[in-house]
Length: 547
Image (tube, rainbow, N blue to C red):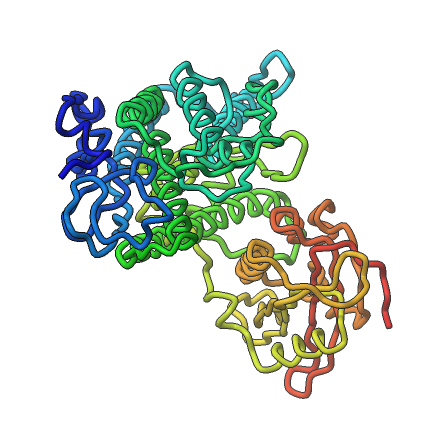
């Protein structure tokens, strides 16, 4: 029995994908499963029954024959289709290679550092042509590298010849209705999704293509000619090979495979074709889990860095009677770094931070110890001295948060300071210590008008970090903001604490790092210790209202 879409396998000899023939590159499982039509690896689905494997764009699935009972490629009886799960091998191998490169660069940097020890005084007088210190010039270079590395969510930059050729093939198939995508899809949206590229990059390169006005109209929903299937896959493969960075190449290949399988699964739903997606969905869940783990690791590492930068500023000439508990790693970090202002016009990063952030993508920290930033084993010492702020959430603070929520009080975070008359400092009869903090789930908008809105995850994480940081501080009576309020028995309302100095607010560095702008400190009578101080914080500028 002859079938219209198996002619290539019978009469044409198509070479195997060039990817699997490259020397020095790992060949993954997907490369061994070749498409029945184009003979390239990376198949998206298989036919249940005969086992024919194909790409989503290559499979001749016709709406009038759905649900299919026979394979359109070999004619064997078929009970349906099954999506292959996502393969993480390529991503994992590329990440391991990136880690090795970071480690080698760090070792090389460490050797240079041992041979060129410069004192703090020497660094402070070294200036570049723009008048910035030698330290700052290195920081700015790291900042530039970090920005380039961090912008990998959407691809930017020059077009390669291979990418242009592949893009032209995508446009041609789009206009001919030969792809398994939904009707009405705009060409600019489709290209941006597949190429993982900014739309501005597309419009700049293809000014006359009328990207936004071209919408998809399905004709076959698959590439009809076997030769065209081969040409499409060959251009795609050449596009991948033209990407020099192994990690970027693996990430883009993974992204495109995921996208084609999503396109095909939606197409099957539209035409009523049964599709087994259990393994595929399990792999998607694994991918979501990995993303969540990487995001949490990035936040935690970022918190460690910002906490160090906050200490750099807050430990500079603190007011007498303000005590900061710090580990040895934190002391070294403060001595070797300058205060860091993440939102300033002159955004600066510690030279090591580029590698820190690169390593975060791999859920790992760098292996060296540069500029006081601790390595893997010492990172635990760089955490908070006390317990997490969440563990300090007392019933009293819960009542405070309930009151704030019930009465729409425009503050999102509170902490509590209580006197300790039996402290370790013999020269201080009374020390105000941290007694807990709590963070709200919602906030009043900056306008100050209800209703309250939910606080986004990043903002809430910053407030938690500020709470953890505050545990490091204690005050003698009359020193620091809590100490002054405790002594005067008068409340105070302070705005702009994020841009103040530590004589006004002893944690101004932390306020800058985590966006604390307004605070209100209130003395509260206590039947057990006489008096405590409650401080309310907001990420927004709040107008004073002592009512």
